[in-house]
Image (cartoon, rainbow, N blue to C red; front, top):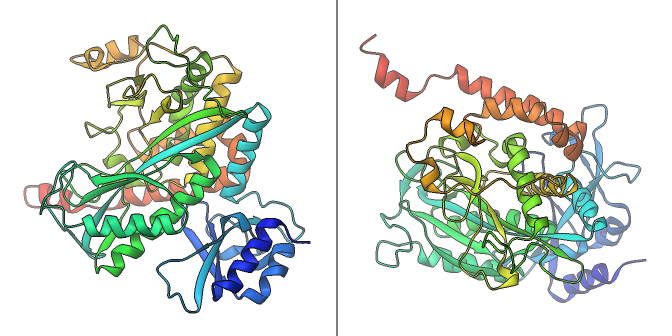
Length: 446
């Protein structure tokens, strides 16, 4: 028997002349995977799933245990606006299961669902609103910016306004609301911010967003990149994640108008924030998963360097926005370390688990760290204040992640061990490489 969502999907497919439905899921590293199914197979797919070879997907199966099932989530069905209206193409996100119907331990979507269910048992829903930055370039092999615009520019320098407009219209056609968009600080760098939603829906939306940005760019003959630091000497791209817990009645559990610190944070929010600060070094591998991520993290004015929180200091890991302190729904905290290369399912799961751990353990929030606390301070003075620095390299992040009991518990042994091995190999490969910078600096004089 089909569910209401499945019935609606089947009727829409018939009425909208949909001839193919793409099944989407991500590998452990957050890369989108897809295969097409014809409509006549959908009822069977809803009931039994569609088989595929998991051994060919990074972080999934071994040759001995490669058979897997993609089980479509009908609530995620959308028509792909960039494909023709005749013989249209739809898509659904899928949960990955084993042949006996058990959720697959290597499915990132299942990891997030598990953590969200634990939070729901405690009475909370995680709402997130990410700010994803990206660059437009002349081509995939030509990282030439399209403009020399700066932050919030709306002049002839901002040649990508049409691209942003088409991207937003496409997202809205897919049921993904956008709050605002603008030119970012670096040449040809842009940001489109999605309206906050629950963590699972937002993780699906982030994956859709990244594909839509690339598809629209390709249609205009340019290349869009979510690489964290593609250009030297200018800002890299982040994915700041605004987040808050709501109770089951729709009230913001982070809000307390009587907070004596003036931040409007409830005791629960402070313990959640303390959990993020305590465990952020252990999940930095998830928020910043590439070698290139650390060319941005801790090296730029607007990228966090210190494991601390503040209201106005953007060098800290977490910021508490104060633009609308009187509005309950606006009360949130902003995790500033992630970049858009992250797998959103695993990142959101790690954030939520760290925050909930802080609540469960009743962690005390340390004092805010503003710019005046950092200026001129030595490393010894910072350490005396309990202010630590973020991991400086992928290698350091791998070591902290490997020994994290919380990350092992949240992700499961399968994903945890895969990421340790995969990212350690990436780091070692990078260490063995010889860069153009080294050749230019040393080849002639040494």
